[in-house]
Amino acid sequence: MYFTAAELGDQIKKKSSYLCVGLDPDLEKMPPHLQKEKEPVFEFCREIIDNTHDIAVAYKPNLAFFEALGPNGLEVFQRVCDYIPDQNFVIADAKRGDIGNTAKKYAESLFNHYKVDGVTVNPYMGIDTLQPFLSFEDKYTIVLGLTSNPGSADFQKSSLREGHALYEEVIEKVREAGSADNTMLVIGATQDASIRGIRELVPDHFFLVPGIGSQGGDLKSTSLNGFNRNIGLLVNSSRGIIYAGGGRDFANQARKAAEELREQMKDLLDRA
Image (tube, rainbow, N blue to C red):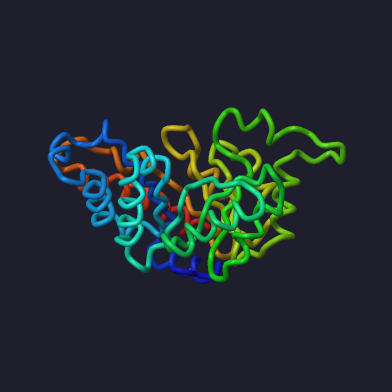
């Protein structure tokens, strides 16, 4: 469902949560009893959604985990996207990045066919790769800015002749190409030392923030340095929630993990 940045902020305030649940369904990590189901991946995602949709503001199904299932995986991906309630924001974690007609077809596939609200994209080939996505009204292009993985330093933090790091140049170009109502930035929670400076570059944009939990990102530091007037953060947790339990009560355990994060988020929202 499309929200302006201000409307998305209102949703966050209503739920006292800026949680995005990452759906990375791995058959090897699912509870054994689901293996007997005709469609174990869909059933796994369905139960996670049923038990967390009132806590989460957004969901981020990761296309790689569905594509790994073969041709049927994309059908499952669509069913999962369709199953997510309308009041939740849906992000296709696809990291697309190509030029011309190829980018246009990627955008058409994800926005028209699967009807997601936002798509993660890789800007390495230039701003023209973003334009086909930006041409869709009421959709978000979510651009990799400063990512959470250790290898982000290999390129993203490289210094340019103008004195900026590459990631800063990307962020400024994204700010010029779109608006806070149609673009977001992926900013890793492990980059908390840089988040305040990034917020100064883009005061109104939302950040999609991976890296909390298993990757070592700090929710408090990320939040207090990244909040803006509309909250401005969607903090993603994948493994920490969906694999919080491995038995028949896995969905209840996922809810408990989501509730724990929401309590931390509520405290930070109150402080802010």
